[in-house]
Structures are given as structure tokens and as C-alpha cells.
Image (cartoon, rainbow, N blue to C red; front, side):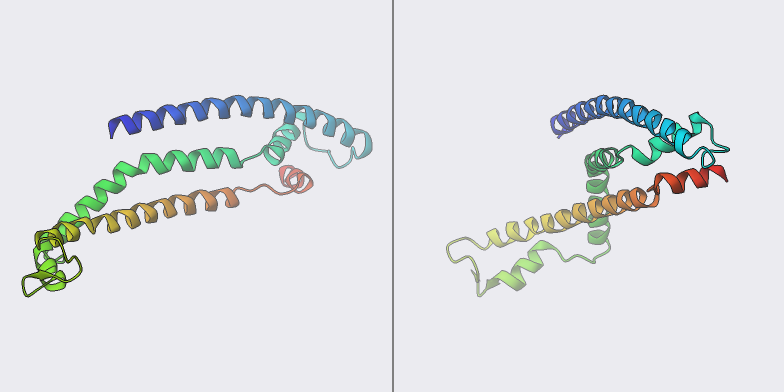
Length: 180
């Protein structure tokens, strides 16, 4: 498990480095576009830019035109892997607490009631009755799978909500807001 997380963290570090390089290149392109747009608006609509400095314009322009999805996608993917140990620990504690409180029947009781009839397995014809016990114990993987899926859905919900809540408007709208 430790090897898995080391590989994942190495891949995330690589993705973070690639994202940083991409972000620097995009920032240069956005700064170039801001300079062109500033010159255009100064020439054709100088009254619209009253009360806004060139530095503030560049800041607003960058907020509007810088792609935001890669940052949120990288954050969500990193959260998926970082949340795994916490999710597994929470599921294990929950399973242990439910078992200790008697909410979960013992596997031998389930195996006897569901799979064994008159000393023979109902589903598995050529296996000993103990196989039902192993089968019932393996059903816990079902809960772990859906527990991890639920945790990942919460992460996706969080990042998509944050992505859309922080979405900037059009450049003109943001410049009007910046004047206020």
C-alpha cells in the first residue's frame, strides 16, 4: 500500500510540475492579450476605462481569461487519492462499531441461514459449507466499494460547486464590478 501511495504522490508531483509550467505559459499569453485589449479599449472606449488602472485591468483580464478547469481537476484527482486512507479508516471503524453494537450479523449466522440447507450448500454444489462463510465475509468489499464511491462523489460535488461558484463573468461585467 505504501508503494502505491509513493507512486501516486510521484505522479501527482509530476502532474503538478507540468501544471505549473503550463500555468506560466498561459499567464504570459494572458498578459499579452491583456496588453492588446487595454490598448484597444484605451483607443476606442477610454471613458469605459475611467477609474481602472492598467494593473487592475490586467488582474481582471487574467481572472476572466485564465482557464480554471485544470487546477480544479488536479485538485480533485489529488483529493481522490489523499482521501483513500481516511475513507478506508472511517469505513473500518464504522464496520467495527456496527459489528460490536450487534447491527451486523456474524458471517456464520448468515451463511447458515442463507446458503446451507440440510448440511449442503444451496448455491455452491461442489464446495464444503465453510466456503459460504468465506463468501459472506467477502461481501464486505461491497460496502467498501460504495463507501469509496460516496466519498469520491462528495469530492466531485465540492470541486464542481466551488468551480461554478467562483466563475467570473464577461470582461465588461467584471470591469464594471471592479469600478464599484
